[in-house]
Image 1 (tube, helix red, strand yellow):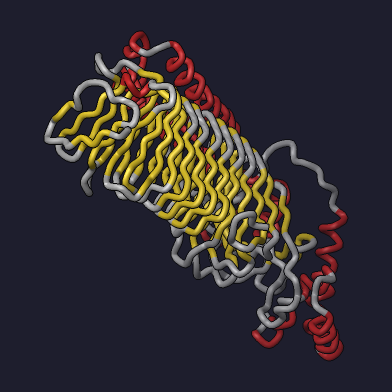
Image 2 (tube, rainbow over the protein chains, first blue to last red; image 1 turned 180 degrees about the vertical axis):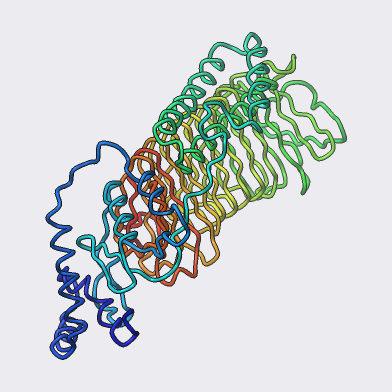
Length: 239
Length: 289
């Protein structure tokens, strides 16, 4: 592992290669490289990774590869990736004049970043591309959240199912008491929620282990519960 | 000419309200408006009285009654029957207001008491207030400008726009945009299912800021010196940032976290199912960038 003395320089290599380092810092890096074979070797490795990354075409995978990769990587605790940290313009804290570069990541780049995180050893700073660096630090990479058994089911979470059914029945019973305009408004906006639920269900079917999709679906169901409560209240005073 | 009417407990004020009817209010009173449609304008003034007026005399079919601290305006006759009005209410600024409308456009200005508006359809516009606001319209725009105090603003089928707010914000819609501009709050929530969320404001240390979009984009414009831990989640979206971003965790499923600055400040969560997430530098004020 690079010690602090060297990491002061290696931390800047990503920006150095990007050309985004300030002139003064750039000169300082070059002066250090002239006298430090170890850092020069790291920079050479890093340049190779950057060149390789830049040469890769932007070809979408036929499917989401991450679940399989994660399963292989994390088949035992020892194999779990030890860090973290893509993205980043290599801020080191002593060049405030340098304007930080922006970051843009597509979903595919995010997936690639995760793979490189898994590849990263504790020896170097890796760069994925302009403005995006991956650096091993030693903090365990969080495992995906445990997926509840409900994740693969299509219906609402059990805790909400009864209330949803009750509210829908309440609203149906009130339909005849409400004026047609109110019914149309309530149904139109219920359709928006139902479409979001359908979208989330379809997405979850393609990636059932995705905790975000599960939470998103649950949120949509919660939104439906909230809306039906509101609608039931309206039916009470406007019916 | 205004007619001052002193009220006692549970008093119906002599039948329909005439134009220019004036009612004495006491601190702690809550004015409740029920079952009206049409247009309602509420303005604060420096008198301890409520005045009800309508240019077209439609307020003549509205009655006023008092029950304890509740002062109720509702259509004359059968409870629940809607009455369409074009009406202006002037209130002492400290009075609390509670409106429940059908197809009612509501415009409120200058109040300092708590305000609650629930509407089936019709727009809600509120400006220059200092009390807490709780506003919802199933189908209608909700717009708040220059408010101090907490704001809960929800629509189901239209835009929600909050500008220059000092106070916690909870804003959401089902089908429309949520625009939060010039927000100074420790707690902000913005959510839409079909539309965009825009936030321009400052991030307070210890503050919590959450934004959720199903189908649309989320844009956050925050000061360049912001300190925050940010969590981003997306299923089929893209992320761009004006800020240098240091990833702290990545789950491999479109969810990652990073810090801005030293990360000692706010907690920010952005979730977009399908759309773009943009993090932009701004000045923390209205207009942002």
